Length: 299
DNA sequence: TAGGCGTGGAC
DNA sequence: TGTCCAAGCCT
Image (cartoon, rainbow, N blue to C red; front, top):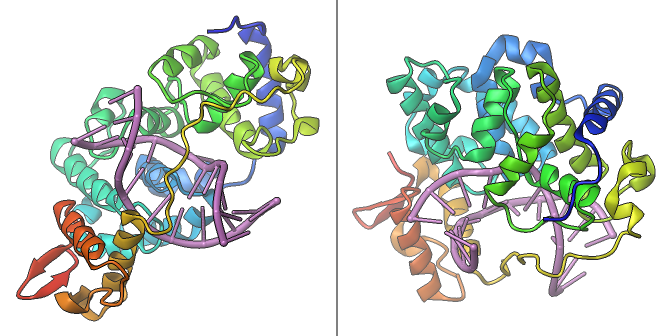
């Protein structure tokens, strides 16, 4: 790993000041949000934000929390209801995982979102990022919160690369070394690194002229070299199994009573083998079930 | 560790 | 148009 040229002590205060003045006003950052929904609100927001843009999440989050304001209320829903409410947010397995997590929280933690990172990691659909995001943002504890934005800021500002490498456990170690001493300052630092990456230090066309740490940025001082050759490319979507799965589930979501005759499910799909493979894989994932020549959302 | 997994907006 | 990208997780 390249040498770190900026002392961590310089970064946090500068970013904290910038964050206080420039951070977006997002629902889950408002005190009323925490007062109303607590850690559950944070947890739901983090599930929805996994690979889905902020602007698409906001309306869904508010509808979701109005319907299921606590883990226990959601634990009593059916998978079909949850998948329907998830609507077109994408990656619908997240809806099942969130539902499962709500049940686990109800059964293992008496309906209260746990504060302990290991307990959070043990819940369905929660990994290194989400567990620490909940612990840091909902409970104010000092943990390294590392998402794609954080990794990009570290790659550029500290390592002089245009894009971070693949996510790795070592990212947690690198971020932990940058955290301020106190819980409060750490939470702000985590949020500020993410915010900078999301709004200024973006993947494409970064706005370096608006960056509060541009003077210390190793990447800028190196002439902003393109070092992104080794990045993993997202697989082609057009014609993919994912597209077929999405079409099947969309048909189910829009059907009456959440079910369709099996032979009517995207019957005009150009590749019948792929269509059947998509249906089978959705059933295997628990996102659909077959019964009596019908395909339906899971009950 | 690499590949699979939705959806839609921006360019 | 096609390509990239988005507060990741699971296997």
